Image (cartoon, rainbow, N blue to C red; front, top):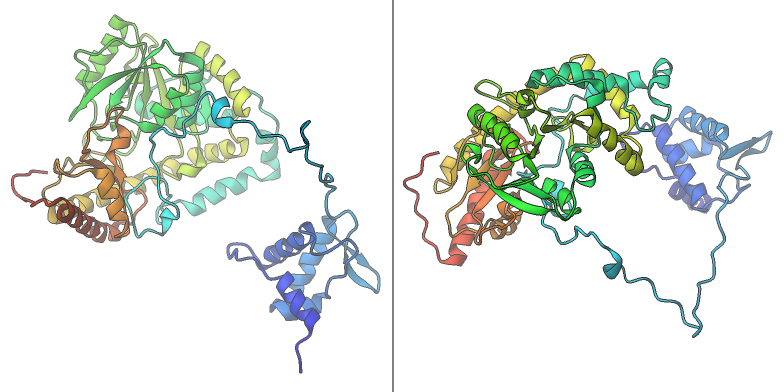
Length: 512
């Protein structure tokens, strides 16, 4: 029996999208809506019966009937007694008619603006941390940017999102907050997160941001101009440098050694950005003595410190070092934190702690940019914190990162013994120094052919050396079991680079 052409057309038109996370009924609704919105089905067009469509797609008739009923309720379809189901009139929104192109006096189409000449503040050519297309397909991603499916607290976070969607909770986050934040999240940051870092703040001194990078941008917008002297660690955090650079301040480079920021002989600056908990990228922790001396210097030289308490919770040995903000008695420290970094970088929730006069200014600037971060996400995360999920998740992450650091260190000693590193006391990365003949950017490109991604070190320097032998191995996106094979593959890339350079490698004299 020849195939029914109409049945073949229906099967192609309503093929379920490849979204296995969605229930079958939702996938069917999506395919019908797509067919209507893309004008494959005109208003008044008949649809196959639920029995016919169920047989064509291999679904139960109840699934098709339920999908049809919901689409009828939503105005996409209409049921006609004893006739069937049809595309509703008005199912597609009205669209504007195409306009004729404007032409100049010559009769030719006018030229578009020259945007290269109009853009006044560009970051296109600024070096930053970047990854290749389809980077998630690489087997050995020693880079930042992915959540860990083995560690992500799926059930706990789902519970908090579901609770936020309860009817009783809707009034807590659905209104327009204008310049404000969700009070529950401010309270959790104030009473749950900050005291662990020795920081005590009033609610008027806390502002929620869309991640730490948003905090950098807000601070630069409020505080910097072309005359502002901004001190940055060298090497330092490229995202902070790029966010600050839009205001074109005068850069002041501050040296970093194995103990973090070098405080002695600190050059003159108006603001100093520091990552004292685990210096980005070297992972060094600033000592208590240096912290106290830095605060004293801020008073003596009249500058303000912007403290990014980067990875402060990821501590595996020793006693937690107090935040600079906790030691600050004169209001010279602006504190930047993140509440989502250990969960997933995509959640984008951070905060600023600063004197209320500055927070008031930042609220108005934030309102002009984005009004406020998602109130739903703020509310859900407040629940996540209040129920203790944040602490239990942090313990799991710390245990996993400690294991991965040990595995990575052992693999480096075994396969790349001529490469130097210090095992950090916390965090989720290792800062590696290759032999002087290695340029990490060239190594990173060569490593890709072996399935390995690393973060070349030149992006962390305002003035990188060449060759730049430094690179960072980030461990938050790679499973522990993949690390040894990844380091072996990286060693193969190093061998190829040595061969291309005519280098003879020596493996003696290094202590890690």
